Structures are given as structure tokens and as C-alpha cells.
Image (cartoon, rainbow, N blue to C red; front, side, top):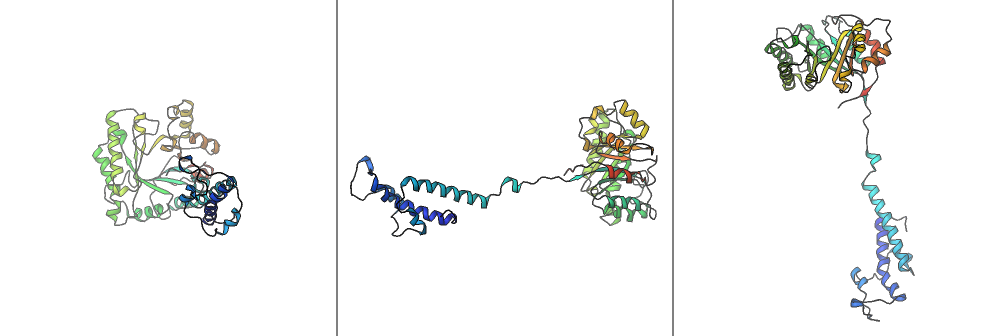
Length: 353
């Protein structure tokens, strides 16, 4: 009987329960209402509540013949437990079966790529991002110390930018100088709006950058400068033409006052040659950001000698920020193949979502 389906089992149980009063009265005195014994009156309150006993028991009824009440009660409890567990198993999957854990990981790099897109000039970068599809590339492009004075840059960019951003692991952002906050904010905002207008001005929605790199940001605290960069960050976030990421990076090139760290999505806390990086470590420059979320920090170390132990350097920079750039030249105006060596050695980090 215990191998039957829950509904069939329950039918048998009800049959047993219907026969139970007769079995009880045969061996035990039955007390009616008020505790008085009505011998032979045929009144059985318990059976009345269940309705009349069936003239023939269900298929399971044969298993009830001669059963003692305690045995039937025990069987009922066991059957109901089996039926209940069976029903639950079919309706509610276990937590272990339904729970999922996001284990996706990715290394993150930021590359200042101020190369003019002459024929083939951007090919090495496209090959790099294609070779490492699990790496998140933030690539800074710089047509003319910013977007330039026209609504659109040189025609060569019109095909080069969409080709680069067609890779799903690439986030292209536009370069804008700020001169430590001394540049007129109206001029900075004009540059931001020019980048944001690229899709509409070109008639091509894929000709777009999806964020802004504010170069030459300050590091010393000033309430006016905090307000200056907050206003710029808000403009980027509100610009449809820079969406959907609307990513903001500021570059003080060193660790800034903490008041600036909450403004952008990412802050470049170091940008200098390798020798200066070693000096900064020795001076404890990065101690003040040791507890800061490293996913919101970036570092750029250039002029790295070929003799440097690369795994050690990657570890040192990785202890400061998640986004990194390492180069062995002193210019961003040409493709630096050093990143082809760096990227395969990068540790992976949990993706943000």
C-alpha cells in the first residue's frame, strides 16, 4: 500500500477510518455524549462525523481487516507523512537545487589610447580585445585633446570607433581636459556635450562613446572644486548620448582627498613612470586608500623597464586598484604592445553587475 500514489493511499486511509468505530466497539466500551453508556443504541459520534461507513472498503480496505486502532492510527500517520513529503517534493524544489552562485570573473584594464586611426593603426587594439574576450577593457580615445572643435571628429574616427566598440568587452570613453579645475566649466561641458552628440550628428547610433575621462583632476580639497566635478559628473550621467553606461573617470594622477572619490565611477590614483611608482610605494602614498573599494580605483604605470619582474609589478599595482594599465613606453600616441604581455598574467576579479 505504501507504494501507491498519495491520493490512492488517502482513499485507503479513509476506508480504514470508516471501519475504525466498529473495531473499537467490539473490544472497548464506547461512551456517548455526557459520558453515559448507551449499550446497543448504534450511536457512534465519531462515525457520524465521518459519514456512513462504505458498504465495501476501497482497494486498501483489506489491509484494515482486524486492525487495532493503535495500528491503524500509526499507519495513518505514516501514510500522511509519506503523502506530505511526496507532495512537497513535487511542488517545492530544494534550496540546493534552485540556488545559483554567480562565479563569473574578469580582469579589468584601462588603456589611454590616443592613436590616430590611420589605416591599420587600431588593428592591434582590436586584436587584443578579441584575444581576451573575458577581460573588461575601458579604452580612452582622444581625437584632438578632447572631441575637437567640430560636432564630429575626423572622418577616420567614424568607422574606427564603431569597429572597436562592436566588441562587447570594450567600453570606450572620451578624453576631456580640466586643468585641475581651472578650465572654464562651460568649456568642459561643451566637450562633454560634443561627445554626447556624436550619435545624432553622425546619424549612426554605433558611433558613440559611453563615458568621459576627465583628465588633470585636482587632489587637494576645495569645496568649489568638489562642486565643479560633481556638476560635470551629473552632466555625464544625464546625457543620453553617453548611455547606457554613462561612465565617469577622473584622473588626479595621485591619491586625492577622499571628498573626490565618491564623485566618479573610477578614480585614477596613480599615473607616472615606474620609478615614481616605486617611490610612491616606499612613501606609503597608497595607505590612505587601503580600505577603499578597489573596483572604483585605477592605476597607470608607464616607462616600465623590460627587466622588471612583471608578476611582481602586477601584484603591486593590483593591491592598489582593479583597473590597471602598464606600459614600457612614455607615450599614449602609439599602441603599446606591453599590454599583450600583461593581460595574460592578470588575476581575475568578481564581475560587478
